[in-house]
Image (cartoon, rainbow, N blue to C red; front, top):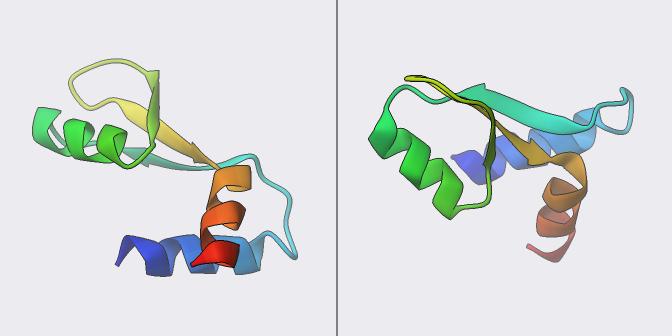
Length: 64
């Protein structure tokens, strides 16, 4: 499912400029999962905000 989101973000990047896909993690378990696949925390807290750079998304989509 996440790969589908990455593919859609890559398509959108053809029409709109942005740096990264962002999300707000719901708990520590989700945070650990997202960190394990490459997301990084940019705002700490109980529900941290995380990002995955567009550059990395494009690499993943183009090689996948």
